Length: 615
Image (cartoon, rainbow, N blue to C red; front, side):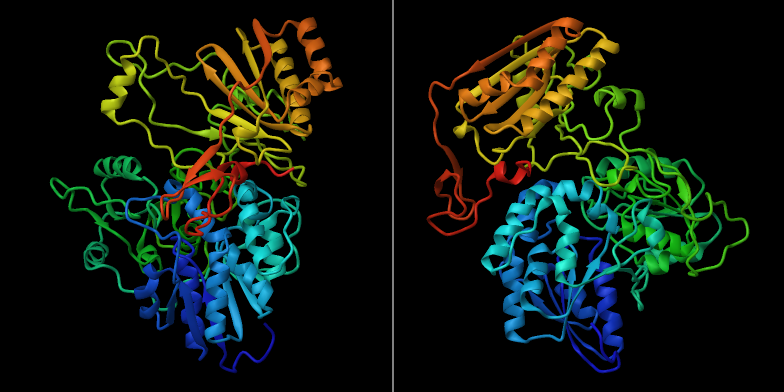
């Protein structure tokens, strides 16, 4: 990246249409163009208009497996999303673009993992543009959330002759280090506590649009009207199923004597009937212009909106969204919606009468999942440090289920999975639990819920299902030669119960490192806790049963009587059948495991490989 910046160069920028990552990339491109450089953007077809409006030469991905769509959140197609970013296609797209015209410099979005590997292979000077906090990927839940995609990435790297990246190193930050210079479009103060960042990481500050578009006319009129305080509601630039949150915000605004500009973030606009004229709803508005006149921002806490609010010196509140688990770790983040921070980056001066929160990003952060800290401690069995055991239950008493008028349990519409958090090298890190990568869940329709409710004795306990994997966690159930069935019931939460959870954690960790162990899945059925363990062979399960860690756990169980009821048994499958996948390209039925469809060659994603733990 060294050289005379005054000499015009050929830049190739590589990104993807993910919402918050787009504005800093486009803003950077416009600044490069203003300095006389020639800039091409290789990106999703959906960004063609925005790229040309910014004065860029646009080259679309030729065959993108994932693109954003109205009323579809990233979480609705997380597997396709992971394949797009971490699989081989972005490496192929970048290689083809460089073949057409070789640039002097590459700038690649930090999450375009396939393109970053291609940049490493091509040897062109590369800048990695990080649009979130560096430490999110380096030390916190970000690295763990993406760990299952490492197999996809390493497969893409093998195709272009690169060596694999090991999960233990924190593969995102290692990938960036190998790819080029790392530029974080943010502020060091927002990184939070932790070890010093590597020397090759440079914070360049927020990258805002130097020539933002004018405000939508209805918003400009609202701003000019003046009088009451102006509230800006920014609920992301992408759809995240915000309908319920948007409704709650609009209801609250109806009760306040304020003007409000609401950006919808992909949510369909509510009907205009009865709408308060003081509240204007628009799909999008440029923060660089709008926040300069705002008195308060209600935001989903996306990094771009957070930086823009601090730059404008505006206090802001944080409702929940997909980034909640990470944003709560930011200075000022925490459960609930409240003013948390005010910053001054020189964007505007304070106005008389401003009502603001604490100055600067210095409010102590809240611990994630801490609405019930007493229960969080119980769910972890009181263990801190390096314990890796899963939380097999929630609170000791089952939560009440949602019931119909005839007192039958309905199917809950909220399905979540949890996985244990791994220990990192940072001893000061707060513990927490995060959602495991999963395929979208499609709950029954109301009509089918009625059918379920008619089944005598039907029940559903609203508690997370948890799982952990072993050395052979990348194998499907067809490979299991033995099933361990566990049952236990607890009746009280006391010291003996916590001794039980300690043994669960220790024994689970020992199992997760034992040859032949595949995975454990645990769940609630009313007052009964169940766990199913999958082993390759009966001999593997029996060998673990004779191990010192398991024998010590059994001994303490009999001595302490910390369970009310207990059962354990090893089962063998009577009839094991093949596992099939159905290609979403040609519809062919494929016996798994398989990397590609034998009929059309389309890559296949094996969910067990995707979510299997890295040992």
